[in-house]
Length: 260
Image 1 (cartoon, one colour):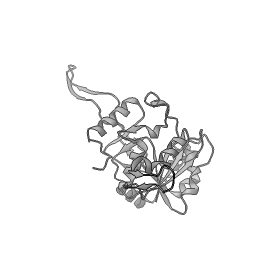
Image 2: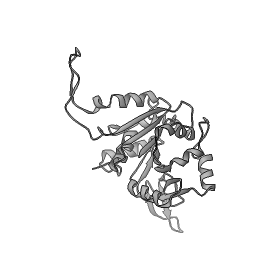
Image 3: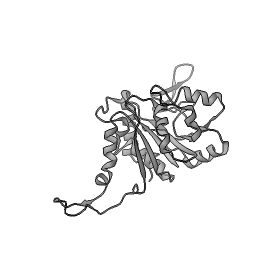
Image 4: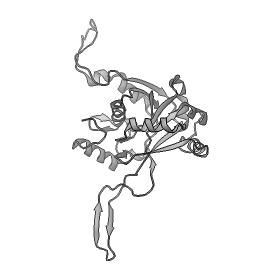
């Protein structure tokens, strides 16, 4: 079963952190956020990835082409008389990664449609964004999807608060302050989709097709979309503040998405 990750956006809201690399390559600790996401799926046995590339896709391609050299000790002959000898192995050695150029200006719906050929004969696949992490139970998510039998499952999350939340009594006395609260309002899409291949009939390669607009609205109208409720950790990396938060969690050993 393949996991499709959208990696092609321009990341305009986080340009103040890094404008010389694509958003999925912005690091959390020593690894790009994209690799954190892939490592998380791999914990649940999902190791066959399709990356939808666009803006600065060559940076992502170069990262994976040189992955062994980046992550392993090796000995090489400078006169090229012997092949490189690698002395260590990483847990990613059994991954398959397809890097698909889905266009510079294509929006999310068009990007997903373009990788249909790489799904092969699989009846279902996973889909998520290359800029958000969480501790979603992927096994339970997949079981939920297979049980209801609809075309698409979206993971519904509580949006993280961006500002300190205050609670007070009738006199104005502050009774509670949460620096990084979870919203008590409605859920939002956190990505972590599971899809039947019938999803492709709702998509086209029209560059301006936004996955989250026409296709999802039509799926809702056709009663073909279900929500898996996730009450745990979920955090996108859209701003410099969120970048700092995720790096702080990682540095302190408190990152819920990291295998310990």
